[in-house]
Image (tube, rainbow, N blue to C red; front, side):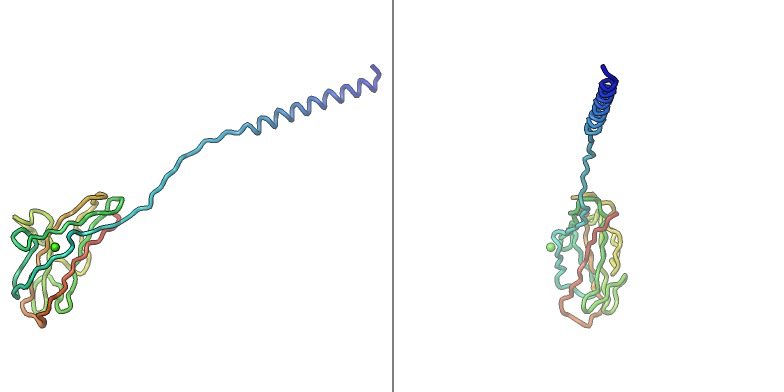
Amino acid sequence: MTFKQVLFSTFYFFTLIYFAVVAVATLEVSAASTATVTATVTAQSISVSVADGAVAYGTIALSSTEDTTTGGVDNSQIATNNGNVAADLNITGSDSSAWTLAGTVGANQYKHAFCKTTCDSSPTWTALTTSYQALSSSVSASGTQSFDLQLNTPSSTASYAEQSVDVTVQATAP
Ligand SMILES: [Ca+2]
């Protein structure tokens, strides 16, 4: 071989080596690998309903009491957590058009109270106010809380028209 041929062969040899190395390097880079973290999420729902949601105490005397127990109008109410997480349930009363909700009865002043346990036999009545107070805490999804209501009419009244004395149950995230 001439010197020129040796030079060319050497150049050719190293060029081949170079492209072989580049090819291998390219192969290694494109041989990728992945792994997936599967992830899911559900939006929190806070929802409550009350069944049957309507109490008719009827026409009753002043300074007297009626309730929803079996000894009264027999209409216990059941609050249900319709959300998808545990919820705290709160309860509140309201003033009517002619009467103010209060802890004791008076002129144009009525009392409304709730009971949660053994209400038919030995009830414990807690006076409602116009602010929310705890009815039940951490009620599981689809869980329920039953309660009874007791109304005390005012000692005197400026109105003999039917009064709306609504009670509201609220669900909140614990
Ligand atoms: Ca009813």
